[in-house]
Image (cartoon, rainbow, N blue to C red; front, side):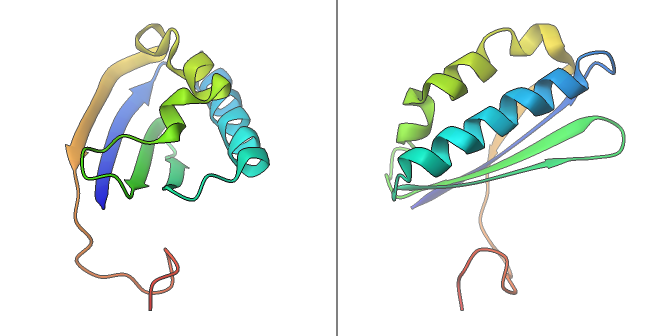
Length: 102
């Protein structure tokens, strides 16, 4: 299992469009229901976005990147950003009912 946290700040004029693209990814995930990925996206008040991806593959690969909506989200991401995406490996230190773990 691998977890990755990605943080970036959207340009204020592009933040709503970024959020729409993210919502489309969740709609496709809901329809496809892949079991090998967990995904959470937060939008902060300063138009920063935080993505947390958990995949069962040790190499971090998942079907998330193969989704049409995710590919549309990735397209032009750097143009929508004031601060580019910064992915980091992440481990859970504590979790109280956030990710379905006991």
